[in-house]
Image (cartoon, helix red, strand yellow):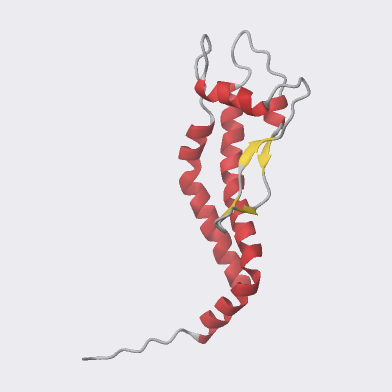
Length: 141
């Protein structure tokens, strides 16, 4: 039986060892880079659907409350970043409720989706931004 030995380049092994101590920091930066791409698309889509109807009562508060969370780990140890709305509103209503009504509609009010289309439209750009950021961060090591 033939044998084959493959050795990793020394430079690569050094980067991998340095990565160990900076993994959390790098993961956070990579997730933020991807999150920013999706956030911008959500903001644009939300801006396009809010306040366009003749009977609109838009105050701009929903758009102003949109943002990125900090990077957090779930109970499975996976790092996550979320796009969402800060709460509460000045009128006591829930931004999440209003966003849900916009996204899915309700009786007498048609759906004006902005989240799902943003997710679909920005997926490839988000992945690419994360790849670039990861490469840049690893190259700095």
